[in-house]
Image (cartoon, rainbow, N blue to C red; front, side, top):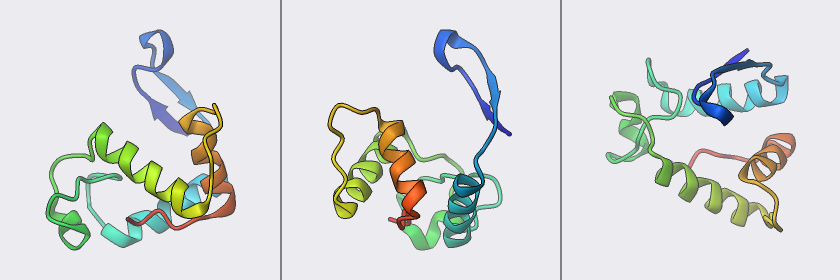
Length: 97
């Protein structure tokens, strides 16, 4: 289960996490191995991400998502960022930027 905070209507929700997503997130964590954060900021570069004490901010997430989607040849075509993320996870693209 994944704990989604401040979702639509400012409500917290527990949602199931698909196995493919979990696998992708585990692979990503193995790259940085931060003991606290799943998405640490990388101001010091990916090599020092394991030492980060602050999460990747929204701009960092958006920039990374845009880059991965572009590298994968995916087009947004009016779909949400979640649609692009879903395509990335289903095809198991490398997200370790």
